[in-house]
Length: 254
Image (cartoon, rainbow, N blue to C red):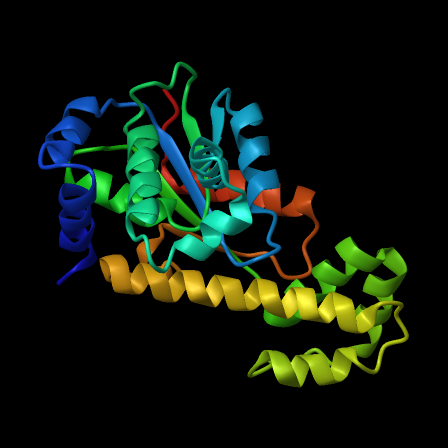
């Protein structure tokens, strides 16, 4: 089963038989930029900047997840534990993501949606007739992700030490990278790396869950129109490159 039919089947099962008809009716010509990416690539930062720069509105799938937890009266962590046993949670959030992508309630020039799966939901909406969608993925090596995590959790000095001492190679797994990080003289090094590995494992769990639910891997770059390497690039440089790529793609802002 291809992922388009997988999404449609899940929507009909968990949202209702009329859910697809309702989505199709909600479609507008509002331009949409859909942003996903590896961890620590600055997806939210870039999405917000794009919305501001282009006169659009910013929408976060993570915010939809937090909103769903609040309605249930549970914490985000508690809801995350339910995802493997209550498949409908993911489906309800993804359906709401598709409603955003339709553009029906967006009053600004365009919408910018950031999250792990919006591009593939955008592809589904395109199958229903939605046009003027651009799907963007920000990539980053596992080494660079670790360095950015060190900067966030331990400061600029830790980032610089890691950048200078961790060999610039393609690491096959987290364990081989962790071996190099253990050589650094950084306070709370073990705690920081445990948190980094936990984040990476959570992302792997999410990808596996989406594959089982719909039949797609949101890390498969074939599902995107623009793939941008953010390695060793500061946020301003990444933003400028995104604008350049959007212009080259012919993406139209109403």
